[in-house]
Image (tube, rainbow, N blue to C red):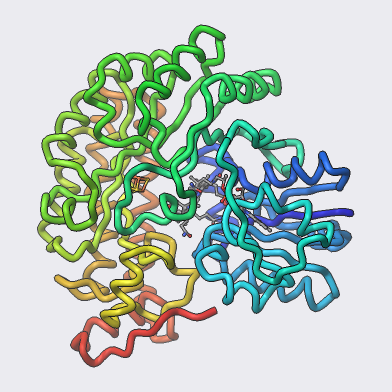
Length: 464
Ligand code: B12
Ligand code: SF4
């Protein structure tokens, strides 16, 4: 059989301008699940292709040859996946849907698919595709031993492949109240260092210059992380640059920091979330302000570039708290700021809370992109929060800060910052202008909502 996987992207992320920016600003990287499932299906004798809409249009004619079309869904891409799925089903194709969003809301996804798989699909994918499992909603049991999972097959990807993504673990031992992945990939599981090294060796041989560790929390188990790093260095499996996700607690271990530096894991996204201890406790972050301060200093010392992630709109945070957070990230010379609007993703405690309190806005799933407000915040209007998001990026990526970056991280970082400075200013003006146009666009709706008292609003669960 021919099986095609599609990783969709929403309208904005498919636009030429966005794709151009993507090319300039980063290296293309893929969602790993379809590359693993594709490999399993290929080994079972099927022909597999994987398409990423973020980087290329799908060749619908080519994909249309397939017997089975498989969609990966995040919440923000669910509507696009459903639209494509409906098109394929109209011409008689069999459609399967899986991934983060479908796993949280399988009944919704089933309206657009022949079968939906909830959870990690390695154990069931062949039986589902070959018709031995016929349940319309398949609850997949995850594999306990991650070393049993075959490595992703990048040759299936139609288009460029610049970065290989490695998941050395799945899930996270913590459980912040807004986090989707620690719930989707539960329980927390780890691969053996030797198994990770074999995968890295494969990417070296395939000529990849960049590898990202996409684990939700690579340094959760510090001893294992150190062993992987030692083996990378010993076996000459160090890549030009490796991005990873970490927590502030990694900075308490100097040996770990040195190994991260030596193995070129030199760009890390750290969830600072808020500089208000009440908020950190409310989201169950298990992190103190002092941890954040120590971590920022330690990373700077070891020349590991910090992408500081803040969550905007937490119930205990005021506008001033948000601004304090941004100010702090500037003060510590964070390499990048990633302000994420609090997003009530289905199947998280924060979603349940807002649904119960009638605070979800019916904006449609495509706006669940962590940049758009989809709920009624406690201490400001939704439009004010949207503007604070724009303010946060604009006040972090200033013209002057580009030259500070020159001192700390060199010319390339300075030029990227200048690019961001320009794009953000143009983007901010566009959003503010669009918000004045009364054509039902999301920003105009948020602006209009802010003039009503929250009690007057009729927030609903977004539908698709
Ligand atoms: C790599 C990555 C990216 C890359 C690549 C994205 C792309 N090419 O589209 C980049 C950095 C560009 C990116 C961008 C974005 N991302 Co992203 N990303 C990830 C990350 C870190 C890893 C994905 C991965 O490889 N997972 C590991 C593999 C093993 O799991 P998997 O792919 O889900 O596959 C398993 C199952 O889902 C299932 N499965 C998967 N597909 C299918 C299909 C079928 C048919 C079946 C049966 C089963 C099945 O089986 C697989 C094997 O077990 C995840 C976090 C995470 N842990 O998943 C976030 C994540 C998916 N991203 C997220 C978000 C929000 C975004 C952005 C909106 C961020 C932004 N503001 O721009 C954009 C949207 C991009 C888009 N396509 O429109 C969220 C989604 C939350 C949600 N519930 O929807 C996540 C979960 C991170 C988070 N914050 O929690 N992302
Ligand atoms: S530490 Fe990060 S990955 Fe772990 S639960 Fe919290 S937000 Fe999720």
